[in-house]
Amino acid sequence: MTHPRNLSLAEMDRQSVFHPVSSIDDVMRNGPSVYTSAAGVMLRNAAGRDLIDMGAGLWCVNAGYGRAELADASAKAMRELSYQHLFGGASCEATILLADRLLGLFRERAGAPQMARVFFGTSGSDANDTAFKLVRYYNNLRGLPKKKKVISRIGAYHGLTYAATSLTGIEAYHKAFDLPIADVVHTSCPHHYTFSLPGESEQAFSDRMVADLETLIAREGAETIAAFIAEPVMGTGGVFLPPADYFARVQQVLDANDILFIADEIITGFGRTGQWFGTGTYNLRPDIVSLAKGLTSAYFPMSANMVSDRIWSVLENASPEVGAFMHGFTYSGHPVGSAVALANIDLIEREGMVENAAALAPRFVTALRDRLGDNPFIGDIRSVGLMAGVEFVADRAKRTAFPAGTGPHRIVARHAIEAGVLTRALPFIPVNSFSPPLSITAGEIDEAMDRYAAAVTSAMPELIALLKS
Ligand code: PMP
Image (cartoon, rainbow, N blue to C red; front, side, top):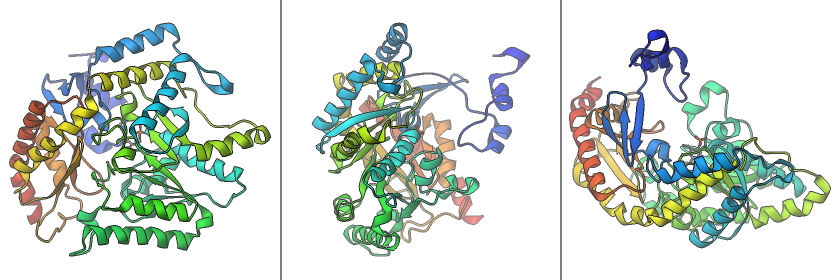
């Protein structure tokens, strides 16, 4: 198909689009991958090929593609009230209903202390920047202006705005931008398979991770630390499940040092782990919860922070004296996004997608293990709910890595596209991740895994060649 200026879409892209998180060199050499339409779990590219999207976009299309209910909700909302801000106490129906719904969902489904209020934004990154500012605000109100630092973890992904990039614990996102900022410190990455010592049990490893956190707090001084931020399951880092007891012990350390817990549920919220929230899956007790992605199944860019009573009561009591809370965005609580989020939550509930994720979880990981468990380059296959990681190693017995910079998982991801399935090649350690729409069927999982296994097989000669290079 040709377009204005007689260029193909791919060529227009090369000449005009500045791609986020992409190699400029790759795009200039190979052009973009253009997609045209999608339905359910299937994504169609510009060549007319259908791919099974085992990533649900970027872990976000929880309800699947092409849902008319969500398109209708957005069209209706745009006709009724296409925009309304929330500044200066302004509000609107959809946003009020959504805030109330989120608090209710969390109260009923997360098994955690009740949250008091919901603050809205437009992306996961801005939600974590909001959390970062909020803990400062809170401690300023408490008369603790030195208590400002936030502890994150190596391998964490919390977004790419200024504070969120700093919270992210992956060097590739930092080094060209002179980040992280000084008020963020990183503690050890709690991924047992890759970072345990030889022979170290999961429990001993978990104990060591908690001891590292305590050492860091002692070094920095608890009086300088406001919060600890964590994804219940670390996604972009490599689908790292928390080791035994980890969060229970971390929570004790936080409590002992008056440190708030920010749960980044941007991936794990809305059913990914087989429960509504990772907070429920791992028994967390967060003070702030960041939500995005599955909140609208990516039909509208929207995020939210739920804030606990502990924080809210301080803000509320101080308000008459300190004046307005001077943070927020033009699109905070957008009525169209709110209507889409409400319709999305209805859809997930009505079609039992969280229950579907829980029911299919064993089949999902078994499908991976049956096909790939014996592969000499696959060291670990792990999953919770409909979220899985396949980790590549050069030598399974010794758990040694492929030579630096070789990217076996990127080679496999390229073969996977050829085989008709999309997986992600993650940036921290060599892992392909899987996070399909929660509407996926058993048959679609099997088909996707057949295609992925075929891709691993066809990539084998290139993987072997990496070791000889
Ligand atoms: N936190 C987590 C855990 C994420 O996975 C992401 C996005 N992958 C973000 C934050 C940032 O979200 P966004 O890209 O919408 O800013």
